[in-house]
Amino acid sequence: MVEIYFKILGSSSSGNAAVLRTGESTILIDAGLSCKKLHFLLKQEGIEIEELDAVFLTHEHNDHSAGIRGLSKYGHLPIYANQDTVQAIQAKLPRRPNWKIFETGSPFSFRSFKIHPFSVPHDAYDPVGFYFEWGKEDLFDPPSSLAWVTDLGYVPALVKERIRQAKILVVEANHCSKMLEDDNKRPWSLKQRIRGRHGHLSNQSTFELLESIENNCWEKIFLMHLSKDCNDVNVVRDRFSSLTGQGERFSTYVVDPSTAETIGV
Ligand SMILES: [Zn+2]
Ligand SMILES: [Zn+2]
Image 1 (cartoon, rainbow, N blue to C red):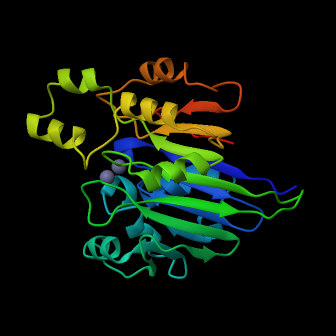
Image 2: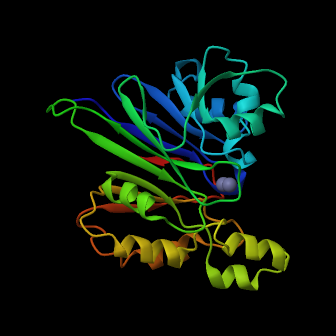
Image 3: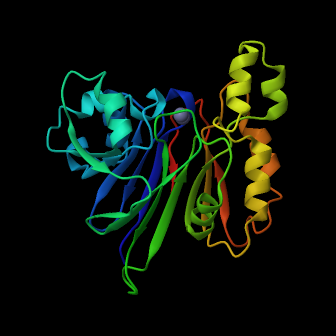
């Protein structure tokens, strides 16, 4: 049996990144932690940075790309992103990493993975979510899939379909609308951006979204990218405990942004 190993190494404004290991490859999804931190967290999982086969980036925001500066030292390591994302990140780098450019909306292969990058509405140059498929119709290597959907203001129909199909679903539950409203650190304009059509999903929007998706394929759901100030792990746990199918057909995990605690399958 091919062991699937998936861990979220960091979440939210302190940096988003996850590692996915299948029988053949070890990949990083987003690299929003410093290379030093990635090194440390991967090592705790028994993985050396040198063992990474590729990195896949959703968009240029620092909380998804801060590690690229350090990772660019590993000259052979392929870093997949679309052209606009590459341009925005490269402008801040001293070296050129081994960029591999994909086109948003066009699926491509990497080793045993088929990867579908799809457009998401967010205030970045060309932000994407990813749908990874791997495995075969084989008892020892069964087909599996993971959707990585963070940083989006609303959910277009195509994204909804990717969310439905995923066995492992990673989706953001960014803020509690009430806590965001009451927050006194953020100016009104920033609050409007977070709530806007190119901002982030609130707990309630994500809850309603998941409740509305019939015939879903979920086995595990990870709720991540929780705002440190405007959300709370327990509020999210409470909200999603009544999700239809929770605990029966699938399990839900809430990723605590305040600890570098890693959770995974
Ligand atoms: Zn972002
Ligand atoms: Zn982000």
